[in-house]
Amino acid sequence: MATVILLRHGRTSSNAGGVLAGHQPTELDEAGRAQALAVSQRLAAAGLPLAAVVTSPLIRCRQTLELALPGVEPAVDERLVECRYGDWEGQQLKTLAKQPLWRTVQAHPSAATFPNGESMAAMSARAVASIRDWDTRVTAERGPDAVWLACSHGDVIKAIVADALGMHLDLFQRISVDPASVTVLRYTPLRPFLLRANDTGGDLSGLRPPKRRRPRRATSSDAVVGGGAGPAGG
Image (cartoon, rainbow, N blue to C red; front, side, top):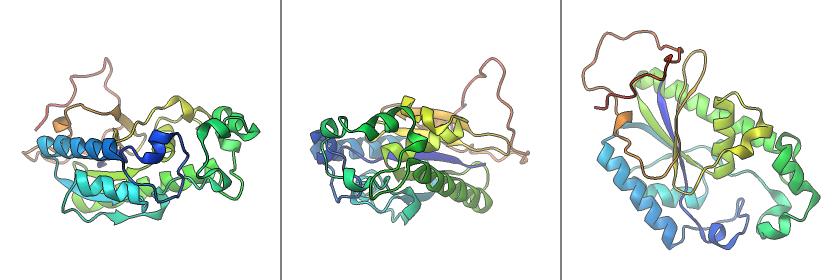
């Protein structure tokens, strides 16, 4: 199956101010723009031929991609949008931390539904469905060596990673996804593999598809005992 790069948007003024933005049209701040440009440099240095680029519709993701992949027009998938936090949107995190629902979000997020918003379980289901649908499509059209990219939000990416690792959503707060970080997954017929997590500066050239085409074999779901030798690069 194909390999997906999950890119979180760069830092926003809401991130910097400790505000839960949700679906508000918050934009990248100066640091966020610099982060997106750094992602651009990483992707260019790696020479990755991206088979598809997909994004959340919110402006902070669009701005990130405009800087990270200039000239690329991404497909928009509403399923990758930020969680609908409802009445929590626009409030300071330090204020929200005093509400009873905060403890549920931290310890039992699968049971958390935001007032006049959506549940975290619903957010997870739609996001996972999006990534798996796109991955199947890219693999069918471009083959199992294809690499594609999806730009989304912190909690959304954490939910996708938790699903890939076979973790219950109640454990997803153990996962960190920093602004402008990349997290890389490869799905196989039996299980996904987490190749990178919360990577904000590593070399991405190991994700390049092989230059020479060998006879195509069935995608293996086996893990390498002992850890293996890692990617050979391009």
